[in-house]
Every structure is written in structure tokens, then in C-alpha cells.
Length: 247
Image (cartoon, rainbow, N blue to C red):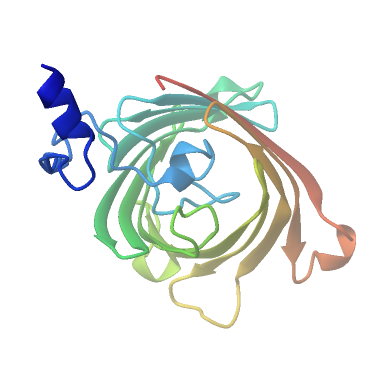
């Protein structure tokens, strides 16, 4: 034993250690493939009004409140598919709007995401209205904390002529300012399909987002543009609150 100890202690005589085994990445399907931008920001699936192409992580659910009277529940079926139900409480239950939405991310290429989005809006004793559109998001950073998103869709209703159906468009810019704080600006347009120069309505949204993995609070202003521009110098206040569970 003594000779063994001396031999090991001699310079240049130490035995070479075998290389460590190669590291492997688990293929467990429970591993999330969602962007860190939405994992760390419960409200990243939307701007102010229109959706982004990001989707809630698999198995998570969110409860949202809009302007006190609006409520929404969203569930992430997979990292790329989510469903939502929403309602606005108004005194006359016959005109209470309710809507069901679905969003599926169909493309992930580099920092670009593309999702198809659909919604059915209905109220008691009223005909339903459908919305079908595409949302695209370009991530500015690798985590997609900051991004630019665009949305384009068409409103369908049986009682509306084809040339009078609405085309909706929006662009959203989200910029991370610090941990848990972002600036969000959105510009939306609503036009009749037959008109691209008149009968349109434009909305400008801007404000701050305070968010993390569990809760999100958007505080901002919504400003109609055009003829109603002078009636709201800085815009109408708008507040969204979201809580996420399942993480």
C-alpha cells in the first residue's frame, strides 16, 4: 500500500481520468417549449386589445378582469394551443356579450411566431358574430420579452353583406423597461371591407405593464383617433388584471 501511495504522489504519474459521459437533453414531453417571454409575463399573449402569436404554457390557466365588468378564463392545452371564454357583465342580460376564442401557434422560425386566431361572439336572443385572423410576433430579444406583433382579421355575420363586413388590423410594440415592467403601445383599425379610405375607426393604446409569472397588471389609456380626437385629449383609462395558476 505504501508503494502505491508514493507512486500516485509522483509528478507525471497520476492516472488520466476518463472523460465525463455526454450530456443529454431530456425528451420528456412535460418540458415546456413556451417562450420565456410568456412564461415570465402572464399578459404576453396579448397587447391591449388584439392577441400576439404567443400562447400560454401547457397546463396553465389564467383569470383576467377588464375594466371591472369584463372577465376571462384561458387554458393552455399545449404550449402552442389555448382556449378562452369571456364575458362582460351588463344590467340587461339579453345584450350581455360573451365570446369564446381559440389560438394555435402554427409556426416558430428563429425569432418569428405565427398563430391562427378565431372567436365566436354571441349574446342571448342575438345572432352570433365570428372573427378569424392571423397574429404574427417578431421577438426583439432571445427570450421574447420585447417584441413587435401584428394582427389582421375579418368579422363574419350572417346578417351583414360581404362588402360591409369589418376588417380589423392592429400592431403592438412591447418593450421591456426593467424586470417586471414593460411599455406597451398598440394601434388598431376597423374598416368595412368595401372601404379603405372612409368609414374606419382607429384606436391608440399606450401604457405600462407590471407583470411576472403569476400576476399581471396593465394600466394605460385608449384614445380614439379621427373625428373623436378632440373629445379625449389623452384617452380613456384602461386597466387589465390577470392571475395565472398551474405553474
